Length: 126
Image (cartoon, rainbow, N blue to C red; front, side, top):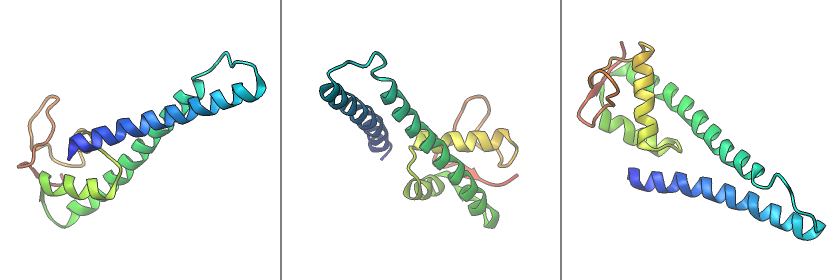
């Protein structure tokens, strides 16, 4: 499932870049003059996808905290639920857990350092 999300995310970024480049080619054809800053709009379009991911992560954080108010849950149950609701990859969801643990909102039950939660880890509020 995560491989599919990775491909989907890369495809979204590539599609945004391709659309911006196609618009630029069309504009150059109509005006007959090249743009010296071609590709800038493509970068901006890619950034907007990153902004979407950040917004989705923020919403997922809120939902995660709400989910954990009632009970402790296994990571495998939580990440599958969040993937269904938000346009994120598993790695994004794991990053959310690490960020919340560093902020002291949830317990770090998966170990220290740069480790990320695994399916069998139980997630609970602090």
